[in-house]
Length: 388
Image (cartoon, rainbow, N blue to C red; front, side, top):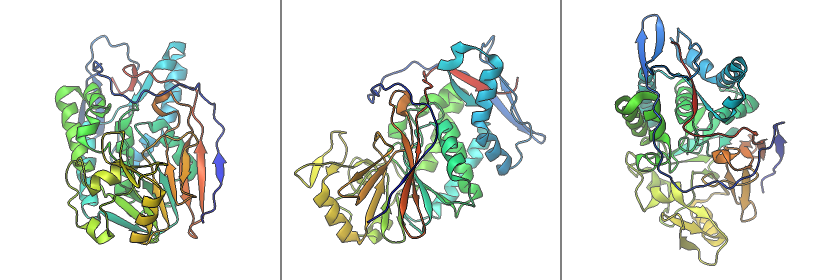
């Protein structure tokens, strides 16, 4: 049995509202940026005439991965500085974005693809680890978590998918995680969630974000390039050969890890089968071992199905993400499965906590909790940081 504990940060709790998880068609609000790279660094120019969008300087010498990581880590400080400088209460409802040179993003995608390509479908890892659940474009919260747990190479990080959609900063999340993978390939690991698929993230915000930031042609291209990299993400991880980590859940069709490693993952997530189940299925208290999911994809599974799966694969614990839970984590079947969700105040309307699971070398587990902020987010209204 795992031992658990909680560690909380001091943050304000936002108002509770019900998150609307149904997709709504939105009209794109486009702020087009032209980005060029030169020998002296990166320069960005806004070409939106008479724009009221506030701007601040972007580093002029992003010449290394270290510089870019530090630039991304300064996101919250940049936002606070811009809001303080403008001193406008009306800006509380605006989301905030920083300039991300599109050529640099494309280079990062290519490099990360080559790193993922060398990894197996099932990552074989050893504790200790910090494990993150869904992030969903909430980059500010991701940085807050990183400030709490620390940076590689002092720690090892495992991310369970759903990096994009819903939130306003999917590109910042991707740029940061891909850069960490490039800089620390043996300390940072990412697996695939159901939103790391073009057939999903073209509807739930990621494509819209890319187009609104770079225009239709360039935005669609960077969206495509990121999704090509997503196709090479590993499917799951096994820690100390006993802790199975996946995004969604388990599959009735999975008989062995050797079988899983033989799958061709360089594809869109199919509508059925093992890859579909690992990214889409959910635990549920129900009579049947397996039942068609209300999501319209994959299954829900009960404790008996989970027990069969654990015996079949000789594992002790399943760690997964995929579902928002009030406390940021939730156990199932007497702590034989735990859901971890790392996006506090999900969609800007829930008051749920976010959590990261800490696994020590001796496999004791505890949780780091991040309370939701009171800041509400209205999509389509953004603060852009770039150099004029």
